[in-house]
Length: 139
Image 1 (spheres, rainbow, N blue to C red):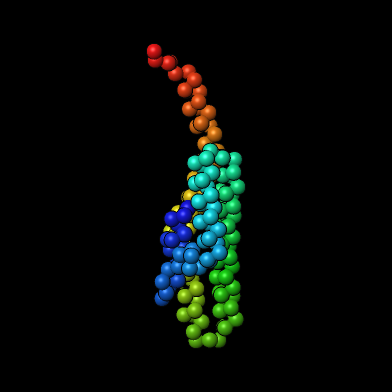
Image 2: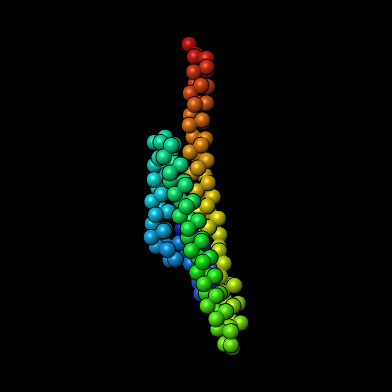
């Protein structure tokens, strides 16, 4: 998830792609904090808290995508108001060309992995203890 904040998340034609740090500095800082906290919680086997960090990161990513889509829709609506403008077609094509990039996929997969560790972590530890208890002791 941390890696995804540095990958392109929004493609804007005629400009460079933006990563999460360039587009939403506060959101990137929160995602980074959640990712580092998740690693620490997993290392110290505090799996119940991973639900909070995983769900919070999914909520933040969902909010960021919805915000971007609403801004894109507003720009499209503003272009509709310019019905008689000769540049309207150019503006429409520009707004349509703005798209999500692969950074979102990495961040979303990271959030899903955090939730998977929250679910499977305690079970794997329980299985490991059970195997250790039933293993024969060598003399």
